[in-house]
Image 1 (cartoon, one colour):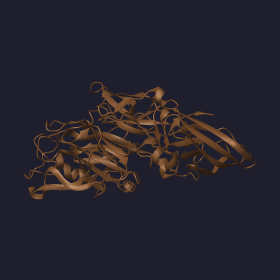
Image 2: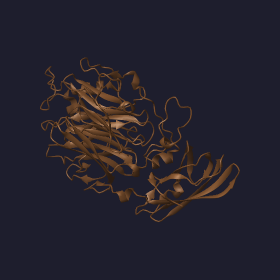
Image 3: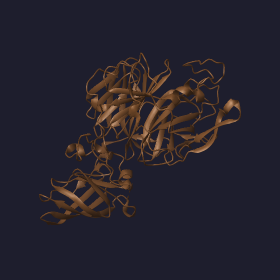
Image 4: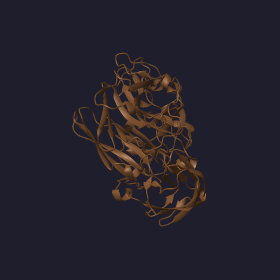
Length: 505
C-alpha cells in the first residue's frame, strides 16, 4: 500500500510564492513532523539541467511526472512506466500491460503517480494510480503486483461510444466517422490543479479528452476537460486485469468544461498546471483544418471563470440548435490568429511538460525508431515571448541570485533575537518572496515581524507581505524574529530565496 503524504502549508502567501512542496513527506505512522535532510525539499537549483529517460522497446514517450521532494522523474512510454532518480539512475519499471499509458502527474497529497490509460477495443478508459514509492525494481508487473491500480471513467466511455449518426451501430476506434460525441477518442492529458475559476483550494484531478481530427465534422473543435475530486477514489480502485476489465469508477464528474482551440489531432496530449503563473497549459498534436491556426500549445488562466455558452459547431439535442456547455476562454497571451481570435504558441508540448515552480519546467522530447524509443528531458524557463515561450535553463541562471545577511543581535540562556536582510542580486525583479533556512539543533521560532513565518521540523519559511513583496535588482528587505534555544545558536544552513540558494553572511 502507498504511504500517505502530507504537505503542511505555512500561510497562503508562502504557498503562492513557493510552487515547490513546503514540507517533507511524513509517513502515516509518524507522530511529529519529520526532521533531518528529508525535511527540506530540493530547490529548483538542485534539479538536473538534462536527463535521458533510457531507450525502450516500446512506443514513444507520452508523459512525465516529477516528484521534486523525493527526487524522481517518471516517464510514460505508453506500455511501460519508467522511474529515474535525479542523478540519472534507473530505479524501476512497471510493465505487463498492453493499454495506452498517456500523460502523467504526481500527487503531492498521496505520493502517487496518476496517468491516463486506454483500452479502446474494450471501450475501457481508466486513470492509472501508481504507488511511486513501491516502484523500486526493474520489470515489475502491473497486473501481478500491488503497485498499480485503476479507476474507470464512465463519462469518457459514454462520449466515446456515442452513436452520433443514429444508425444503431457504433463504428469503434475509427476517426473518419460521425460517431464519438465531440470527436472523443478517449483520454490523454492529466494534471492536478485547482477548480476552474479559482487559483487555490483543493487540488482536483483534471482529465483531458483525446479528440479525433476528422476535418469533415464541426463538433470536434473544443478541448474537453473533466475535473474530479480524487480524495475518496480508493473505494473505486481495482487491480488492473486485462482479461476482465472492471467498471468501477465515479458515476458523476465534478465538472465538464470546453475550450475552443480549433482542430487538433488527438486532443490534449499533455495537460499541466503551473502554480507559479496560475495557468493551465494544453499541449496538442497539430490540427488539420485550414480555417484554424492549429497551434501546438494553448493556455487557460486558472482564474478564468467558466461561463455557460454555445458550443459552436456542436448540434443540440435531437439535432436542434446548438449544444450549450461550460466554456473556458483561452489565456490572453501568445500568438493571436486574426481570423478566429484563437491564441496559442508554436511550441511542442505533446510528450511531456511539467511545471516546477519559479518559471521553470521540464520539457520532454521523443526520438529514436519504434522499438528503440528514448526521451530527452530538458530544464527550461518561461520567457513570456510569444514566438519562443521556453528557453533552456543554464547553470548561471540556477546559481545564487540572492544574498541573505543573518545576524543574531542578542541572546540569553533560552532565547535569541535575529535580524535578516534579503537582497536580490539577480537581473530580474522578484514579486513575492519566501526566505527559507534550516535552524541549528534545539532552535525554534517564537514570533516574527515584517513576514509571515512558520517552522516545520527544523525548517523555517518566512514569506513577504504585500508591503515588502517586490524586490527590484539590487534591492534589500529586512525582517526579524525571536527564537528559543536549548543549546545556544548556530549559523543557519540551506538558506534559499524562492527555492534558490543564497550567498550568506
